[in-house]
Length: 432
Image (cartoon, rainbow, N blue to C red; front, side, top):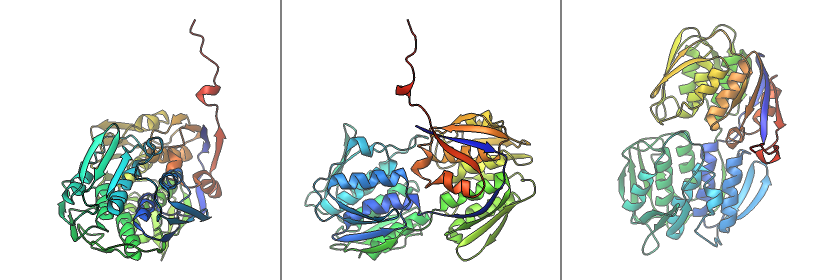
């Protein structure tokens, strides 16, 4: 097991280059199963979730060739199985994208119920609604999602999502790419990684229109062919480094981004007193004065992203005055608050709203990550805190952030990864 040891209280200076988008990569890689040929995927982030999803494809029989740490070639011509490994699939939330990809290409799929970060109930009912509307029979038995279509090919359908769901939008889009006829997804999610998935599929020969709006039309095609595609930069990774500068002070140039994707985060940081200068594919972040209070409500894109909620809460814990953060996307996403309190934050949670009384400073302490974005928030808080913090369970953080410790070190942060003894290495307790 690894932990991060951070000596906080230092402002950040320098440049950081943003990796490929985690939320796009974990959908685009399964979508390669739809392609009858070889697809080359570039700008893949080097994170554990990507490693897992590639391993699952390998076990299904896909040929995977690593060109470099950020580029792979995937050939799914000779898939041996449409049943995923339970052990692997349960470790990653994005494994449910394999249902749409396998069902769309082969007419059947058996995928273990997904795992990933546990911060509330995240049902897959809208995914199942879409697959069923396209003619699939779907059931959940013995921990597996079973989906099959008689005749081997789905048919187009009009699908209205009862809630705006990123996962369901992307999964249905994949399943519909090779379906017979036209599929229309209404009340679709509009996140940048949805547009990226559509662009990837279109580059392989799909016919998808309207991604990025609330109505997406997919005209099914007979097959997808190979090609090359580069994944977009990671909006949330960029936002996390922006939040880190806001919390610690300093000046950092955030490189390899799409500034338009950052507007929802940039606007809130500017409101809090952070200076942001936008260029073609960079943002210069500077904070020299005190942080100001702000109210934040998470919303589907283009609103403030739920995946930035813990990070902005960590920053607001150091702002002057009382701030409110309202989580409108997921339940139970404030589990990390008790860890921030260990650092000295003053936060009270009432159902979906956190009331944050800004404090003068935080103080280092031992803390524990409970999920990916919560872990990022703890890193931010520890970087700003006076003294030493030790963050355990950092495997959650490494699910979605490539080389976070080295990147922060390059900005002047005093952070290091330390191997700690696992439970099996600890001496047995004397219970007799």
